[in-house]
Image 1 (cartoon, helix red, strand yellow):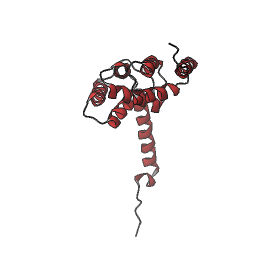
Image 2: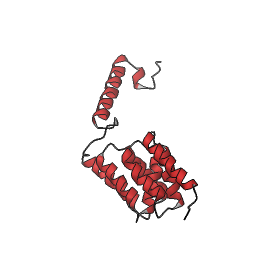
Image 3: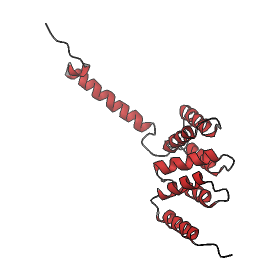
Image 4: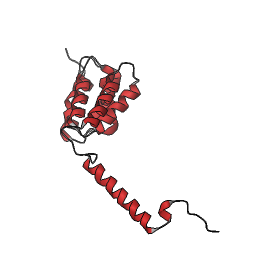
Length: 167
């Protein structure tokens, strides 16, 4: 009686070669699709639909804050200018404070790599409608930047907040 092997790649070298070819092909497709990290100017139709779905989740007042944060995190991870533009719009839309909070929180969690978000985050940090959650998320997002200019400005804002008003 012959025992049968459990996995196809255990059977013969031909299957291992096939598996290696499939993994290589998948890696090449992944790299060519833009998932390797470089920013792309225009997404294809599937990617546009994905961005639209994420924007809808970020904008929907019926969605939980956690869902909005996850949508913002997904948009941050997309290598498309459309995704970046939408996040900047949400960050500066004062009529959608949950959206602002979600984007600031997503940047805080993933780290501030895109300097385009720094000015809107500073505006949220020192703006007129300072809500504690938004100020906290904006400060954490700005702290995550590894840029001297952002760090210097953040220290200046913190120093100004420590000084009492002399009016």
